[in-house]
Length: 573
Ligand SMILES: Cc1cc2nc3c(=O)[nH]c(=O)nc-3n(C[C@H](O)[C@H](O)[C@H](O)COP(=O)(O)OP(=O)(O)OC[C@H]3O[C@@H](n4cnc5c(N)ncnc54)[C@H](O)[C@@H]3O)c2cc1C
Image (cartoon, rainbow, N blue to C red; front, side):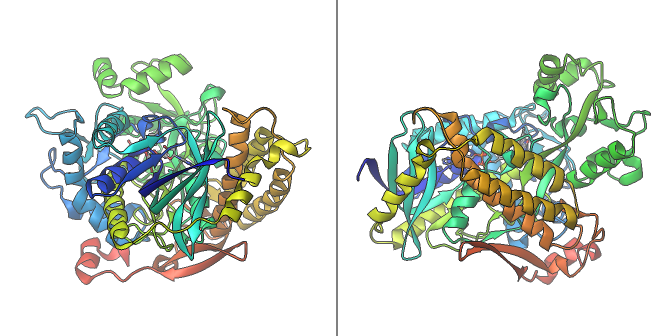
């Protein structure tokens, strides 16, 4: 059967967030015929929700800033299991990445003398986040989108990639379908860039958008690529806790950056007990654990969070610096944040782990397959600092695009795609329509989220992680009995069913990796191994699919040059 459309390109970018668009711009500028495929509409990727800013050591507000302090902060934030080479590249190249975005039309808030304004943020020693109020992601996406379209990059929106196509161990393209019609496609390409974002929809309380279902991590894993650091999932300390319909929605760290204070029900600024030096601007893992502790020990707020208060600042200032937060609380919770405290609690937010990539080129361990942005691993180690994701997207998205285009130049022809395999993918895609079964995608997703929330959250223990693995077995069984109703055009249930395959396999990977890392470090807190272990400081966990099962091995982190080690000081040893 041949009921799919075939397209041919040099570079295929999966995802239209900040990483995908920056990669596409770079690939097209480097002479590769480039296409972007995106589950969402153009301009609606998760990046658009980014609020607080882009971390880059421009030193506009504090002249003492530079790449060295940024590198140091990033490594400290990640508790030194970051790929130090990525952290150096990121710290050095972020300032130019921001200026470039400005040249393409992004309009940032300004200092009094007209330079890009930078704000303080958790874990950053100097005010470093270039921002546009609390709507930075919107401005970033707008500028990148304009650039992408102006360069003539072709973009196909509302389409879902479900398989990567391989030929003799190298990438040959991708298979999937258009959401509106269900029409299937094969995109043949010499290089593919995965920029599909995070995995947050696996948890019930999450700040992540609908598309964050771990598709890219699962696609790469199924294609034989290695994943890394998958145990490190960031729970942002401040999500909304009330009303229930918006539980998990992010309350930007910019609130604390602009002077917001965290208090328990007794009005105590509890961060003084946990990190008296950094207080509210401690790293996210530390603040999230501290909030969790306050709640567990009965000092939480009315609806099971803690209080975040910015009402001591002038109302006009709050409204101009945090317009989205003002509106969000007004509309959803009937709270005026210029007068009343917010109620906040931890929410699943970011994936430090992802596709293992070469720090210079962003190429994965599969030939011709690249990854950038939240879908890739390495830069953030055990915990990401706020603002470091947006600069990551720009710096490593650009590198991925340039490297993919260079790879294409060395590759002669498009590799072949196997018609037998395509026929199988076509059958697999629609199998749930035809089989009987009482299970629904929504029920399996809900139960998956409950399992992960209860057992693979902020505080972990081998007993709960093993319980999660047992429950995941059961959910995988139930998955095989899901029946999908309706047609193939715009069928949300069907889309959820397909992304559940990614979510279930990524959930297992995260859980197994969390079980394997027998220590507490950054975003991984183990009740049964409460201490940081210097042996674990030296290695990463690598995940690969071997004979259809999750295989986990350890890999030594690359040795750091002495001058960088000295820069980091004794703490890093
Ligand atoms: C509310 C909020 C505020 C934030 N604020 C900040 C901030 O101020 N600073 C900061 O540094 N970070 C911030 N972050 C984090 C940051 O926004 C994300 O980490 C980042 O935007 C991820 O970008 P990305 O390009 O990797 O992926 P995304 O922006 O998530 O884009 C992924 C793309 O892949 C597509 N896709 C996924 N699967 C498929 C598939 N199977 N087929 C086709 N397409 C697919 C999606 O449709 C989408 O287009 C924030 C996050 C949230 C939730």
